[in-house]
Image 1 (cartoon, rainbow, N blue to C red):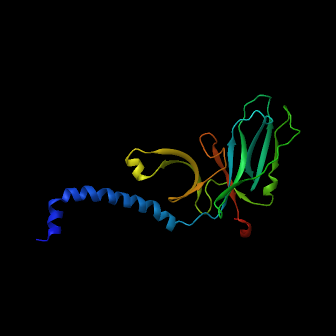
Image 2 (image 1 turned 90 degrees about the vertical axis):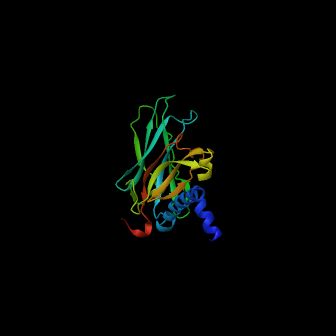
Image 3 (image 1 turned 135 degrees about the vertical axis):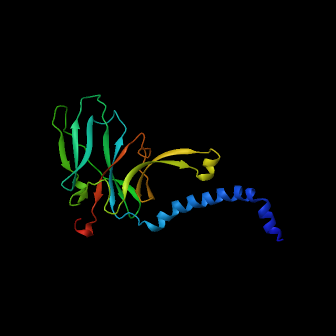
Length: 205
């Protein structure tokens, strides 16, 4: 009798107990890695609005963004003094550099309480077509995700941490979006999709 075969036959349950967790870990690692190989990276820049924490030192003006006729517009509304309001700021996720930068928007200095809302086009995006759909033509969409760590080993031993992050997701492939402080925690600073910038070389949809 071959010693190795005898050991396996006599200790089949021990072998199964050791090998099964390894098989499960290998399965989950493969399941998380395969989308990285099969799903193409993003091909559209994403415009994001993030909610700014209330700041009493700034003028009481509410700011929000929306897409109208393929263009991004910003609406300003004057509020009463000491009024709490959420103010949005506009960011662009660059799909080639996988980085985020803010799109500057200048607040009007002559808007006072009682004035009607004022809506203007975002000057920094003049001439750029924006798709207002939640999902980009390449299949990516913005999601707010809970990230658990430090991985499978940490979860087995109860060493978990919970992070909230914004990500682009497409068929299992996840591209984290790292916003500047203080917008990194989506619980305290919610983030929303405004629209997808049509590549300038495409000439439209």
